[in-house]
Length: 126
Image 1: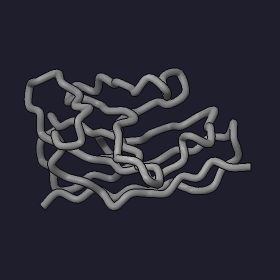
Image 2 (image 1 turned 120 degrees about the horizontal axis):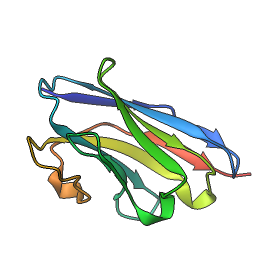
Image 3 (image 1 turned 45 degrees about the vertical axis):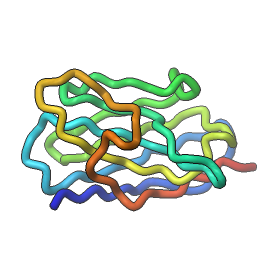
Image 4 (image 1 turned 60 degrees about the vertical axis):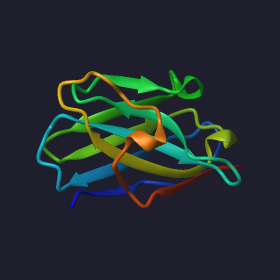
């Protein structure tokens, strides 16, 4: 059974940076997409960024130019580098994975993903 484990969250001041990590295990194919989602209090979980099976990234508009998603295939880890953080970036961040084969899609819909981690909390506050 695939497992995803997030880490790297914490409390940071506005304008600061954090790097989230998502260690993926139990997925034997390298053609899987990974997404990062954020859930703020009282709001639905929504995509922040995703990486398709060919490591092509995509981003939600509010984080473009500030967040960078990347994958280290040796470490089976997907990272989310978050710079210039704002209070509205606060929330619990989850990574998720789905096998996409040769498709170039990078799913933005929560329901497209099969495997989820437990999340890591990010709080941006002064």
